[in-house]
Image (cartoon, rainbow, N blue to C red; front, side, top):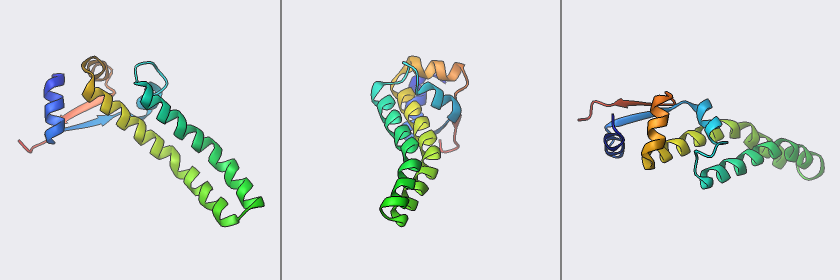
Length: 117
């Protein structure tokens, strides 16, 4: 499927795209991804890294319920970060034909046509 067909089908809902999440996470650390996506990824990664220690500090010195809430958010964030990385990669694949071709060749992006035609 060409990039033009992919973009048209994806926007109209005739194409379903799946991104390999682990590969998307690795792509977030390369120059292949737009800087704005990288900045968002780095920001949320730091929020995740700091959530557990911050939650513990809040439990000890401020309020245990606020601390527990922060820790729970920290436990949920890794899955959300992976999903967001996949969305960033897919969004860039829609915009950039060369990036799309690399994803298809490396089998990071799997495109399937739906039966809505």
